[in-house]
Length: 189
Image (cartoon, rainbow, N blue to C red; front, side):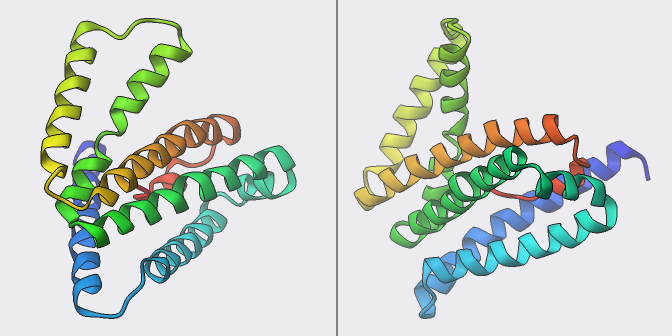
């Protein structure tokens, strides 16, 4: 199997599993006494254990570098707590208080934050097409979400911000530690 085919299959599979997880969570919230905190804890502990085992098998040297260097460990903890955990919590709370499609649309506003951060960080004004895209995305999202619970808007913005934290910290982690990309190929948003 070629790398391109493998990449397409993995991307399609990951997207399908991620999409299914939102719908499954919504069903759990509606029909069972499952709390958001419990669901996120189970998901993150399970994924974390699987990734740690995979990392120890494939890249034990990099795992040791992370554990024995305080700065690296601090960055990984920031990634895990401020990025992944809060992203998952806010996404699943948004599902609980509205529905999976609305929470997903809110989450996909994260490129807006990335464009703005890059513009401010590099002190460059966003291109016209970026400005138009941001305005259209924000207007469309507002129109979609106004029929939902107002709590969902704030949770969606929080989730979007956490995904941004994941973006900036994971980039640093991969560059600094040079980890095998498969270790970080989890669907964290």
